[in-house]
Length: 105
Image (tube, one colour):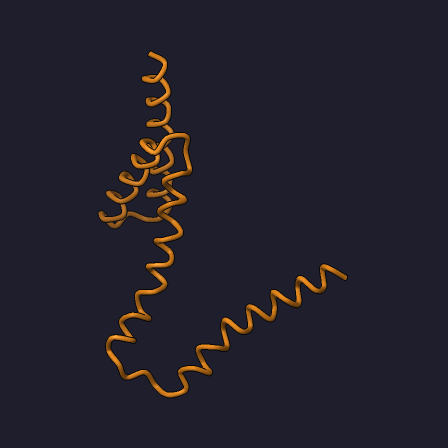
């Protein structure tokens, strides 16, 4: 019974999130400011969720930052998702090993 209630609540919330913009914005949006704002919201939200998670994904912020920097360099060079992700993981792993090795000296 609880599972059905949880599923019902989540279905209702999902429906409301998708329905409310259609109810609020019945006419075509003409304001350039509002259009630009709505265009960049998904990117801002994705960045706000991804960057903190990436910074605290390893044992050290230094190794996480190294992975982020490697990913940014390859992404700006228009490399694909797989090479960017692989390079970020390898760089973060190598930096984490270096941080631990230097910490033991």
